Amino acid sequence: MAMEAQQIETLIREAFPTAKITITDLAGDGNHYAAEVIAEEFTGLNRVKQHQLVYAALKGRMDGPAGELHALALTTKAPE
Amino acid sequence: MTNAAETIQSDIDSNDVVLFMKGTSSMPQCGFSSRVAGVLNYMGVTYKDVNVLADEEIRQGIKDFSDWPTIPQLYVKGEFVGGCDIITEMTLSGELDQLFTSKGVSFDKDAADKIREANG
Image 1 (cartoon, rainbow over the protein chains, first blue to last red):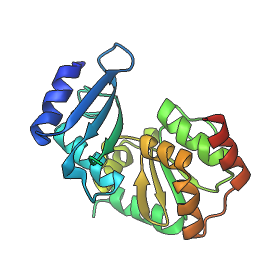
Image 2 (cartoon, chains in turn brown, orange):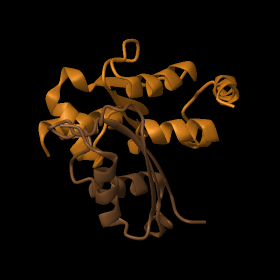
Image 3 (spheres, rainbow over the protein chains, first blue to last red):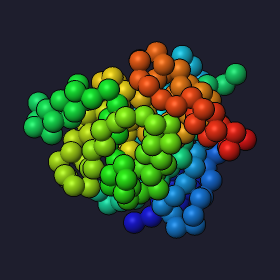
Image 4 (cartoon, each protein chain N blue to C red):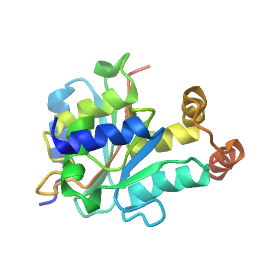
């Protein structure tokens, strides 16, 4: 069961209401996306922590049992 | 602690660098695992590769252990460093060199510079 870019953005938006979110479809198969998330919630967190917060927002869909999202190339930053 | 967690803990305690990956260092079976294994191989880093495809318990266990949903996962001196995106970013920024240097892990500096040159 693939995912739409909009679904990913909505899930991330729920966790990061004021973030700047850019989703790019890498393969057109609903399974390989890139996401850039710039959120003030990341301020002071290292990259691993930032990515973990985004994965948590995706509520288990990342490489999940139903294989919704196989690849999500993540870039995260706190606003400068 | 489940036996998967015990196995993982002992792997990362007894090896300076551990890469939990799909496939093996010489035969990676996923693009992302292949990229990280490729960087480590090219930089001449000695590491233990753990093929999560060979053991479903480890495949799920490592995701819980690191609170990280994807494979590959790199551990240096018992600490989780990141997955493919983070290792790629760190390689290109030179942070991976600094991490290895600070942790006393030997690697080929020229090879690391070549990777950066190749990636402009």
